[in-house]
Image 1 (cartoon, rainbow, N blue to C red):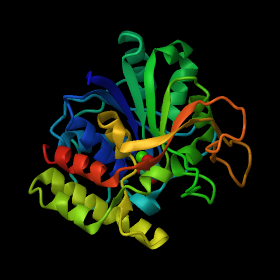
Image 2: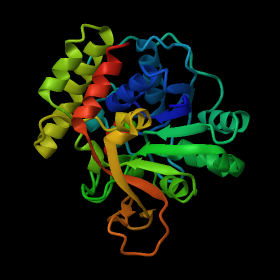
Image 3: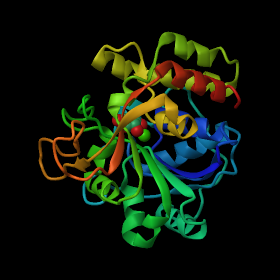
Image 4: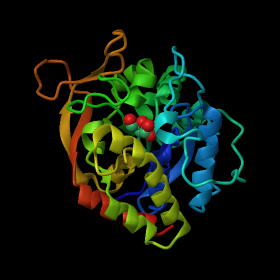
Length: 313
Ligand code: BDR
Ligand code: CA
């Protein structure tokens, strides 16, 4: 497999943290050109800090980390401290990062990188609200045809919603941005809750991280211990869904996932269903397909991959 260049756009978030770790642990397949932070799970001041903590923890303090949008395109910010804790990375107490935040803006970094690298060689991996990516497309529409693929975590069809009855968090926070991305015409692969709610960290899987005997393994176990309380209470599930690493796992082993190439539209108007991903899973309209919308994953294969790679750090 050719090595792929990616930019991870993120709002860490314990599951974002594991996604970043998985990417940094996979240098044969992935070259992380940069990590761009967006406001989402917690405000931007915390997500950019958390992104640096995670890169440093992985031993990759050289990865450029940029701060981006502190607000959705046209709405007030909605955050998720009730899931991720006050810092967004609650669980173990972590020291402030020493690696610097880059001076430029995340949106400019996305635009410049896509202009400077050969067309069709850079993929975007958004695992938070889509504000930075949408702003980059608004500021510089010429970059859109240069993106190789977008692989994002967001949305839901059969699982419907986690922040409202109808909407998944990342899409709900900035539906206008999501609409821009879903209408971009760029090859789009979507990891919705339908998939990520099958990626559950059971007791055995948490223990496997802890048993690695590494600092990173212990941290991943402690983070999942912290945020699983929320999903256990809410869904009665055995553990927390590790949403965001599904995107990176897909880039590493696409065969772990299956889905359908279908039309997906974003609801931006309705008070009741704002942020809903209206996925034409049953192909009942003639609206053109615009996304590969995943529906299932091999959970065992996913956790085998995760533990193999995280153990390297
Ligand atoms: C998504 O929302 C966030 O809380 C997680 O990090 C994930 O990206 C799941 O709905
Ligand atoms: Ca996230």
